[in-house]
Amino acid sequence: MSDSALSTRPFQRVLVTGAAGFIGSSLVDRLLAEGCEVVGLDNFDPYYDPALKRRNVEQACQNPRFQLQEGDLLDRDLLATLFRGEPFDVIVHLAAKAGVRPSLVDPEGYIRTNVAGTLRLMDALRQASGGGELPRFVAASSSSVYGAQSVAPFAEDAETSRAVSPYAASKKAMEVMAHTYHHLYRLPVSLLRFFTVYGPRQRPEMAIARFLQLASHGKPIPMFGDGASARDYTYIADIVDGIHRAMGACQSFHIYNLGNSTPVRLDDLIAAVGEACGRQAQVQRLPDQPGDVPLTCADVSRAQTELCYAPQTTLVQGLKNYLSWSQTVEIST
Ligand SMILES: NC(=O)c1ccc[n+]([C@@H]2O[C@H](COP(=O)([O-])OP(=O)(O)OC[C@H]3O[C@@H](n4cnc5c(N)ncnc54)[C@H](O)[C@@H]3O)[C@@H](O)[C@H]2O)c1
Image (cartoon, rainbow, N blue to C red; front, side, top):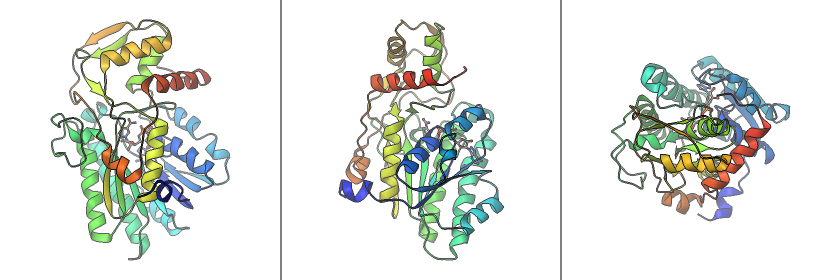
């Protein structure tokens, strides 16, 4: 597929679920800047401070082409009302319970939102279509589906049935259900396996956001394990670009890794965070966390070939961008 065929396609009307979150609000801003009409669904889940989510969509809410629909993905009546209105050409489904560690505490909540919620969304689409054509459905999955055993770099066809956290299991189950709706009802589906996304508006409990906050206040950074675990950190603008490309190309059923293909060890990340803050980071050593995987590393060749996806942002640049942004907003640890 040529680059122009993929990325210049204008979207008329898009539904973004999880629109007030980190990735959702960043996508909403890009779509609005391109002239799309966007409806954003979000229930302002208290997993982290909902005030941060309100701030994420503050500017979008000034735009007459944006409609914020506050409500729960699991609300059948709300979904039916949404889909009775003017049709959407793409649904980008990002709403989820997103953290790995809290999923060990509330596994049922994760299954309810991530699996039953996704099912409700797809089923409301099916019912509203009355057997007619369904809009494109682009949904967030996660690198966590690769578990702890996959051989790096992780390719989309690797084994993914050995989840090591309820979060990972919920994402895998969501993928399987999306395939079922594609098979039964010809729902065009693209599932995007994101690899540790960071940058402005990042969820405050995630490593880079927390580490930068601690290091810039001269506080020690918690290091779980011996520092050898590694993550394929991917900058938010590159992820938004990948989502946008997948929206344009979505037909049939596809799974894409969206990562950076450059894993960074935890101890190297901590050193880079210290450098970005202009001081040597102090480290607080802690034991390994259950549910965490030792390594994530994306093989992005499929997204490269089929979507012309090519992440641009280095970790050093991404950390700088995050720091400049964080100086313009108030972030609490
Ligand atoms: N950030 C990452 O590194 C990362 C990595 C892999 C996958 N993902 C996936 O990407 C998506 C977006 O992640 P994020 O980092 O922006 O998280 P986020 O928590 O900032 O955004 C998710 C949004 O969904 C909303 N939400 C939760 N439950 C809902 C419900 N029942 N009804 C309506 N809205 C609901 C939340 O209020 C939140 O605003 C998620 O599906 C997540 O699992 C993220």
